[in-house]
Amino acid sequence: MSVHDEPTLNKETIYEGKIIDVELHEVKLPNGKTSMRELVKHPGAVAVIGITDEEKIPLVRQFRKATEEMLLEIPAGKREKGEEPKTTAERELQEETGYKAAHMHEIAQFYTSPGFADELVSVYLAVGLQAGMPRTEADEFLSVEEWTLNDAGAALREGRLRDAKTAFAIQALLLR
Amino acid sequence: MSVHDEPTLNKETIYEGKIIDVELHEVKLPNGKTSMRELVKHPGAVAVIGITDEEKIPLVRQFRKATEEMLLEIPAGKREKGEEPKTTAERELQEETGYKAAHMHEIAQFYTSPGFADELVSVYLAVGLQAGMPRTEADEFLSVEEWTLNDAGAALREGRLRDAKTAFAIQALLLR
Image 1 (spheres, each protein chain N blue to C red):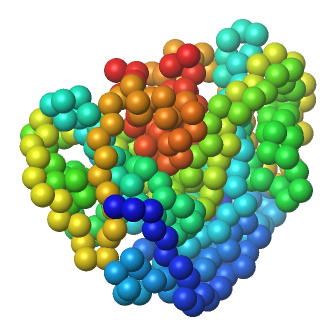
Image 2: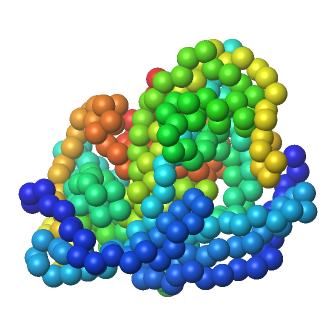
């Protein structure tokens, strides 16, 4: 099959929120028929897997209302308009864990759920971590844990790490 | 920090769609303040990484309106009410690629984007694949490609695989 697209014939904005917008598009299919697409627009996110000098990975445990459970994740945050993703990554790492990284580089970019959302996550690897005080925002409630790669790998295999970007980043380190 | 949650004080349903619902929740935070949560409700999904007798991985290339690009992904589909996820996985693999699997088992479950969505993806590994004719639905336009694990790993490292579940599943095979 050749490359194709699905041109938008009509579009309705269902919701414009603080983090997401929701749009309903009527699109033209390759066979000439039309179909509806429910789309969530998201500014994108950054996530950071760090390695301390003690070879530990800082993880953040927090309640996620969407899933109604506490989840263990690598530090992350949504992209800010006009801010370089790397800058956002450095800021989120420092705010959530206190760590400042000497070196940080992007190891991957992926869409979290391309069936309905345009959220793209950039995953950074951070090394040369210098400890400091976390500066979480007033309404953020999270705790920081430091895991060995071995323990994180075991948690992943046992189904105890249930966040996609975190699972990806742990596997990326295991593959190095 | 101890375990906490964010009880819903008020809730508004913004949209009830074919695939997603969108809800706005006013929640109570641990400090007694309130905050708003924009939530996307999704039925969940299944995805299948298969290995043929020739050690190839069937991948599906399709246009994704949300991201406005063609993406290469492992076969996947959303969960159907009243259907076991494994049954959905078997059905999606067969519909999209024609393959019937002798053995299929779940290797992971993760939330694709727990910051705003409850979508949980179950990833299955399928072996003992028997070729057959794909039976895509009338309005599905996709092409099947078969990749070696080596080539898929290289594409992942070079940023040419941009779907989270696919990146995760390729890594999982590379780690076996």
